[in-house]
Image 1: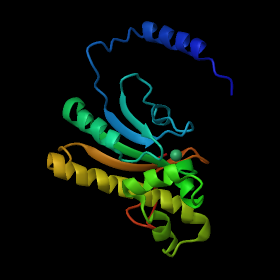
Image 2: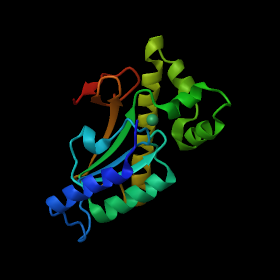
Image 3: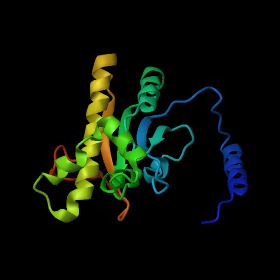
Image 4: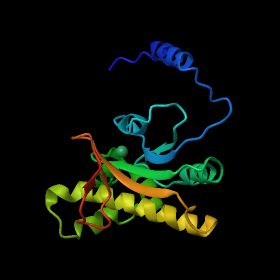
Length: 194
Ligand SMILES: [Zn+2]
């Protein structure tokens, strides 16, 4: 895919001037989103939140609740007051795939193990689920663990999630461009939003 950063910037700047956008006063994002670095994911585009300044984003491999995500969400919740905190995972995630590659990608597996995903693969494989579903269910279980780490962090540092803030765990299905709420347990029902 050809990349034209200069042309892309000119187009962006033209729209910025046309809309008379002024973000110099600060930011007021309605959503704080933690999600994977995968280039197929684009939170703003997926949810048609294309206005610059509308989403406070934290991106890393898999979309884990890492130390920088802790710092970023702490800042967002204390100063920006988003109405929603969203953790978004996706099918076919290369980060989670590393759990199947043994020692080949130990940097990624170590990173996963450090953020709630130790024994993730073994746990999911021990559950009674169809073979073809194992990977997707593993991504879902990884996401639930990130949500739990986040809620635990909020409890310890902020006496819980601020009132009025909704916390969501979503999975993006790359194959179908669909999004569903992460089931509350292994084998739970997937509630599709789009
Ligand atoms: Zn990914």
